[in-house]
Amino acid sequence: MLQITGLTHSYADGHTAIDGLDLTVPDGELLSIVGPSGCGKSTLLRCIAGLIAPTAGTLTLNGAPISGVPDDLAVVFQDYSRSLFPWLTVRDNVALPLRRRGMGRGERRAAAQEALESVGLPDAGRKYPWQLSGGMQQRVSIARALAYKPSLLLMDEPFGSVDAQTREDLEDLVLGVHRTGKMTILLVTHDIDESVYVGDRVVVLNRSPARVHADIAVGLPASRDQIETRGLPEFVRLRAEVGRLVRGGAKVPGAAPAGEAAGPDEPDADAAPAEGSGSELLAKAAKPAKKKSPAKADAPAKSEDASAKDDEGTAKDEAAALDEAAAKDEAATKDEGATKNEAVAKPGSGTASKAAGKTAGKADPA
Amino acid sequence: MRTLRLGRGLAERIWLVAAAVIAWQVVTSTVEETYFPPPTKIISALHKLWFSGPASKLFLTDKAVDDFSSSLTHLFIGWAAAGAAGVVLGAAIGRSRVLHDLLDPTLQFLRAVPPPTLLPFFIVVFQIGATMQIVTIAFGVVWPVLLNTSDGVRTVDPLQLETAKVFGVSRFRRLLVVILPAAAPKIFAGLRVALSFALILMVISEIVGSTSGIGAELLNAQRTFEMPAMWAGIVMLGVLGLLFNGLFMLLERRLLSWHAGARRLTS
Image (cartoon, rainbow over all chains, first blue to last red; front, top):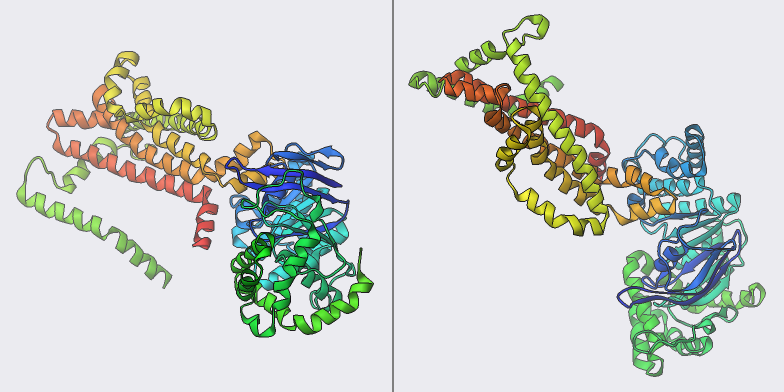
């Protein structure tokens, strides 16, 4: 079990990346963490991995406080081409951390081969990472993490640099690994669909400094399918909800806002969005989201952002900040993200919200 | 087809050398200037001096065995010592901010001193002989290795280090398995430069303070107006330089094949 209480991290230049974040991840859970890019997700991950010491707050993994890199923790980084060592063969890359597990040479090789087989790369062992495609390299990274047999696996936007098809394959791979390995997985992403599809639970972070903005249980069946699961009304509802939360928009009733868990020291309104009560914020932010019409769906981010600025003099603080974040995020995720969101936005006023309405009562976790 | 292409590649590479040799031959044999003997004479001097020995000794004369073994031994001991010291010191300085700040100004100064200027000092301290020559070579060629290593280990990708840390690779193993391999392309570049420097310093140290070796032979020939023999020494040194560089490149290509492969794919 991973427990984070009051985690705060400020960098030397005074930038506060995380401010009083509380989070508990029970054993065996696959938790997705979403948030606008640059919201402090990576800092959070580095704190958990023991790579940086937080300014304040405590982290404990399985009851032991995290100081330095924990023993039974592995990380899959986004940038596989840099996190795999090009001078080692694939097998040596996977076997590298196993020396510490007290295994002999033969055992290490066998374990590496087994891990490679489990990610569908039984014949890649003798090759070098750079001889493989991007998706295969990320599989090697996952194999390395699996061979290490950690109790907690951190994944830092692991599918951010692969094409859409590969991405889906890798999502299913992670789901499979989670089902068979029973390890706790913490997956950081900025892809809303992915967070819902993969997660047992989705935590939405605020714009920097990061805090838990919302915490949503995913009530989807355990075995998931790229086509079927994504078509389920519950999936559509959750995706819309998480999407709105990430963009600071309206919330489908049900998910408990975690905004109240703010730290005692309120940062000033200019430097960072002041945290009011969660419901108040969401009510304010609701207006621009409702205004969205199919006619405007061509440029959803822009029009939404503009209307928010025009009409919401009062919601200048948080809603605007979050909207800007969403707009930036959208720009960053390029066409892929934009077209996906569009697809949600168009039927959004019709089918999706109807479906959401229907299932909201039944599937509600709270 | 393949042999044709191979032949063409070879022709492309050696045409200039061949043309230069022929031109040299034609010009010098018409002018008949003593200071510029034609290649035929240089080659026969080269042959007489070093390569007219028995087949059992690979056609090397006793003189060749003497000269080459002393020259090359000094060259390689000096280069290897400098390489080892350069990598160790460079790695320490590159990984430790404190060491870098403490040592860098001094090292920069020592590096700026032209190595041949220290020869008189080394002769006084070590007397004329092998030690003096080795020290001269080592002192002169340590810098490119040291500075390249220091730069290489300092600029290791932080993500590679974080990855190693996360997976519990110990400090020492991190140096061996991650930091030094990552810096290897730069270290090898330094070693290659050092090798050509070493050849230069070998000759200088032999000219100034030795009676055996290729450099001493060259000076000796000049003093006795044996122009073809002097030229033979010059040609021999050029060939050795070429040979060493070629061998080193082969070694480097073998050891750093991953680097070439990774770079080819990313570009």
